[in-house]
Length: 416
Image 1 (cartoon, rainbow, N blue to C red):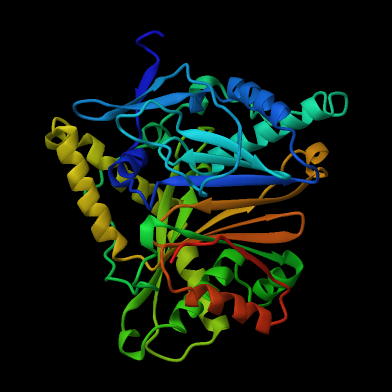
Image 2 (cartoon, rainbow, N blue to C red):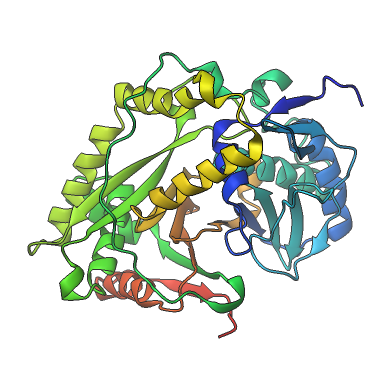
């Protein structure tokens, strides 16, 4: 392997590397359920084919004196039947390993990926390539000429887009938020997370958002806020409820990167007066739209990337940088009640979509964390929780069933 086959990790990856833990493994999972059982031998062959399209995943993260870096690895993925936890640990500083894994169970294909390697958009693209290559092997004559590849070059796919689109030094810092209410206290033992998969018809939920003229993200976000409010002790209702929403920056910059390229925005409300769901959703929507202007997105990204260029920071040894980042992340986490990540409507090629039953997505977290995605007329939420108390999730589901929404909920077992 040549010495040129390496590159520095991006700034978001640096945060993940500094804050990975046994509970919050910084792993995301994207899954695709087909309408037939998985053939493990064909899936193994499909994964080996897919990495030819996405060699960017064939990286090993190493520690340098001043930064982490990624280098190519000859390790090959080995497909296994799912047997362990969702979002397993995929990074250990002293261990030689791939930072993603592919498993299957019944009709479902799971891709778990360490978040320092990619974000949800990049992971879903890689999963869809695996699924297409699998179906091409399963039905060799039916999918000739079907492709998912964007036409991006290898350099485009491995680009650090934060650095590429950085414009101006911004030392003003991010907006200040008060310590938020956390919808749980006692955490699950043994560093566990519990996962919930919630399904509902989009035809049941989307008209409700349209009726009050807000986005589906804002409607679901307001529902989560109300679910949190309904379990808050009265003495704590002066604390803000803050939902963090990751934003795909590819929607604002011409990037094809398969690496991380997202920012977070925060929507906050203090329940110091009575408010209806419709009023809260409208407030949520207005706050979100205000933050998602191109100018605000650019300022936020420049602010985030600026620290990379501050001269006194660059020569500081890695272990000191990691301590600083870990402390900063701990302070930031106090200002977050939960995370809501909308991956949007998933649109595999039409020739493939007919063989897919559904998708689901999860992310490990020290917070309550909900993903949302839509496919085939079904809105699917993947919720991860570190807390023993499940009141928020129950409140969320009950509020929808009370409105006549047809909901199915599945949950993993935990040890108490």
